[in-house]
Length: 209
Image 1 (cartoon, rainbow, N blue to C red):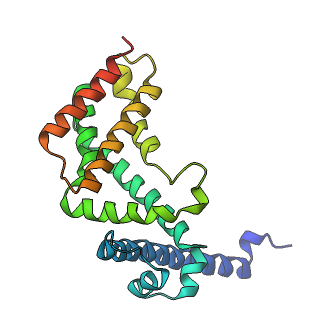
Image 2 (cartoon, rainbow, N blue to C red):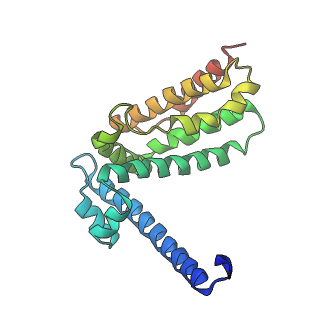
Image 3 (cartoon, helix red, strand yellow):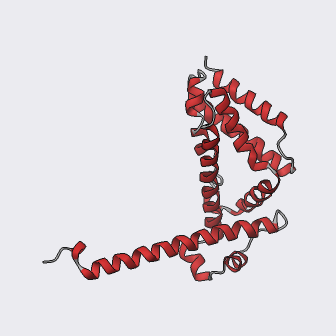
């Protein structure tokens, strides 16, 4: 008997599934990007509607609900996608430094860069749409604190933290809290803000010495 991997029908079916997977990945990316565009246009005046997101993406309602059971699920995916991109960006910035102090400052600069003008407008609009994340009602909407805090474990350990994971989480929550405060006040983080937040993070790391 012919093995499935050598069977013509099986191989054709696998190619079809691969093409469909590529098409679906493109659909998801189109929906994520379209949602950010729609949310940014609406700002904090109104929350994005599925119909507007679908229209912006050029896809259909069927395509939307093929990947997301609700707008809340889409917003959660946007937050996850944005966190992954921000983490990669911050990690790249940190890699330019050789000292833990320099890495911590780069981390602060990278996180707070989300409050800068155009980026801040998009971030604020997405956060405005998290208010309806009912499926996260018990623990709140997804937070970028965890993934970003992970980047501080190594420099905090080098700086003498007795518990790098705990201290990094504390610094991440505090920094993201300051970012959100700047976003809602529509204030771009100033160099002095970066200095003070960096000093706080360094004190937090050194507190266990």
